[in-house]
Amino acid sequence: MTGPVSPAPPLLRARGLTRRFAIPKATLFEKARTSTALEDADLDVAEGSAVGIIGESGSGKSTLVRLLLALDAPTAGSVEFDGRRVDAAAGARALHWLRRDTGMVFQDPYASLDPRMSVGRIVAEPLWALGLGGDGEPGGEGRRARVQDVLRQVGLEPEMADRFPHEFSGGQRQRIAIARAIVHRPRLLVGDEPMSALDVTVRAQILDLLADLRRRDNLTLVLVSHDIGVVQNLCDEVVVMKDGRIVEEGPTEKVLLQPQAAYTRRLLASIPVIDPGSAAS
Ligand SMILES: Nc1ncnc2c1ncn2[C@@H]1O[C@H](COP(=O)(O)OP(=O)(O)O)[C@@H](O)[C@H]1O
Ligand SMILES: [Mg+2]
Image 1 (cartoon, rainbow, N blue to C red):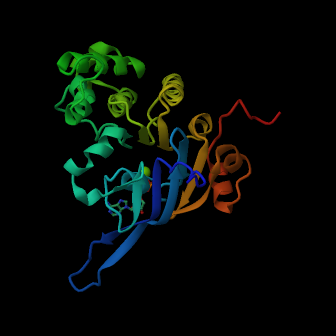
Image 2: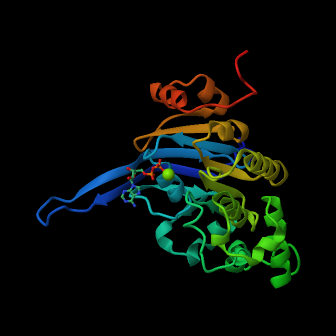
Image 3: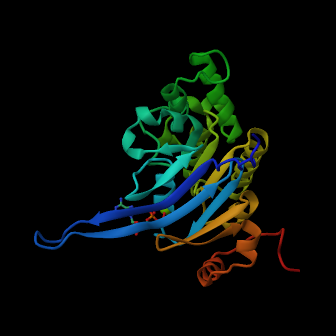
C-alpha cells in the first residue's frame, strides 16, 4: 500500500520545553520559590537549515540551547534529535550518539577551555571521547592531522596546537572553541554567541566557513546572537525570545524587515544593524 509520504521529521524538535530554577531561600522559614527561565517553548529545526535566536539578556536563550543539547534537564517538555528522545538525565554514556552528531560553542570562550590542556588536546578531545580517528587511519596521526586542518579552517596556525589557552586573545580562544565544536564533523552545530569576541575580518572568515560547511556537509546551525548581521548573513529562520518565551519566529527576512511583535521591533531598534546588502537607498 502506498499512503501519502510523511514529511521528514525535523532534525531537532522541542515541545513544551520549560525550565524553572529554585531561588535560594533567604531565611530558613521562607517558602521555596522558583524562577522560570524558559516557558513552554516549541522549536523545529530542519536538517540543513540555520536558525538564529535573538532576545535581550536574560530572555532564556542560553537555557534553551543548553536544553536542546541535553546539557541541562528540562522541568517539563521534551527534545528529540533525529527522531530520538534526548534525555539529559540518562548520563554521558547514554548520550554518546547525541554528542557524536552535535557540537557546541559556549558563550564564554575562556571558561569552556581547560587551561591545563594544550590547544591541540582541547580541539582533539571530542575525537578521543567519541573514538574517532580524524581524517586518516584510526589513531593519533589521523587526529593530529584533523586538528591541524580544523585550526587552519578557523584561521589559526596549526603550530598553535602546542600552546595553551592563556596564550591567546579572546577572539583566538573563541576560534579554538569553534574548532573544537566542528572537529568531529557534527550534523548540528549550536553556538551561544559564538562570534561575539571576533573582530570584523575574522568574523567574516568564520561566517564563510560556516556557510561552506552548510553547503558542503549540510550542517545544521542553531545560533544565539546579538549580532543581527550574523543572523542575516547565516540564518534562514529567526526565533525571538523575551522573558523565557518565544514571542516571534519566522523566515529571517520577514522577522527582521517586518517584525510582527512590538517587542521584536523594539529589540531590533536597539541593536545597530550594519547591513550594506539591504540598506535603504
Ligand atoms: N543556573 C541558573 N540558576 C538560576 N537562574 C538561572 C540559571 N541559569 C539561568 N537562570 C535565569 O534564567 C533566566 C534566563 O537566563 P539565560 O538563559 O542565561 O538568558 P540569556 O542567555 O538569554 O541571557 C535569567 O533570569 C537567569 O538569571
Ligand atoms: Mg546567554
